[in-house]
Structures are given as structure tokens and as C-alpha cells.
Length: 217
Image 1 (cartoon, rainbow, N blue to C red):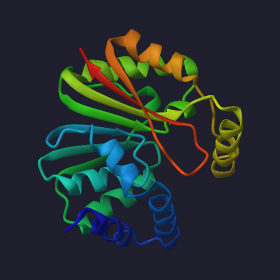
Image 2: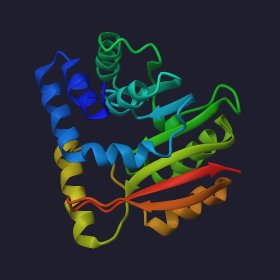
Image 3: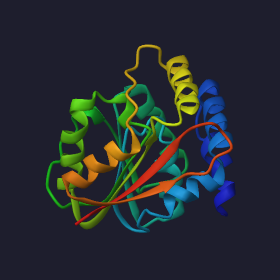
């Protein structure tokens, strides 16, 4: 099946009409190009961690792309995890697993087990003092040469930041929101021991997205 055909197939795997509508909205906004921009930096095989996986949209897509990938999704919301598990079963994907867990206090079970990990729009929902310990844990869990992808929102330009803040608050009024300046977050990732490159994501929507490609030295 072609990659564009994966998107409707994944959306149809959810029962809840509200979730299905949300998924359509997310994929319409993000588009195939967005998924490919991130996916190009993921290995085509090995153990990959999705922190804050939500309903499993990204992990289902990337697992369906390559059967030799082993995706592991973690999210605090038990219902979202159940929906992701059901969708994976309906799609016949045996290379993706989900578990309830708090990404903010994630601890690796053993060092050097992961080939890659990613956090998409998670950092700005974590208290600033908890970001470095989390990144250190992920660094510990990655193999040498392993990759961490962090997509998050820059604090500039101001107009785009306020637009993103309004959307974040509309979706989760009680959620913590802390946008990091690109230089500051990049420096934190490098300080933990990553070799960091920045990919400025082109989007028609007014989000100041930055994708950090972090390779464990």
C-alpha cells in the first residue's frame, strides 16, 4: 500500500467518531510532507520510542512504513493508549506496542537499547526543570549513534508564539505551556551529550516549528 493510502486506513482503525474526526484534522494539517520531514531521520529498523504518543497516529504511520521497525508508544492517558492498541490490532501491526506512562518522568530500564526516540510537541508541556533529566534518560537509553528527534515550538516570532499558545490553551486549558527559545533548547540538548542539528520546518500554518535532530555521540 502506498504511503498516502496509509493515512485513511489508519484513521478508519479508530471507532470513536470524535477521535476519528480529530485524526482527520491532524493529518489534514500535518500533511504527508510533514510526516516525511520527520520520518526521514528515523532508522528503517530497530527499537524506536514515541514519548507522549497520544492516540498513536505517528507511531502507527511509522510502524506501517517499515515492518522492521519496533515502535514503543508511551502516554499518560489510559484511554488514548487503549485506542492506539485497538487501532494497531485492526491494522495488523505487530511491530508497535503501547503502555501507560508519564513522559515527564520517563526512566529507561536499560542503557543503550534504543535506536531512536522522538518527542513531538511535548517539551513545551513539561516543567522547565524536568526537561533536562528527561533528555538525560533518553540519551542513556539510546545506542551510540542513536537519534532523538524533538519537534517543538520556538519562542519567536512573537505573533506565531501567541497563535500557538492560544491553540494550546483551547485544546487543554489547564496544561502547562513553556516555549523554549531555539538557542536555549538546542544548548540543553547539546549539553546532555548530543550532536544537534536544527531543521526549520516549512508550514503554511503560523506555527514556529523547529525539529532538532540529536545524535548520541
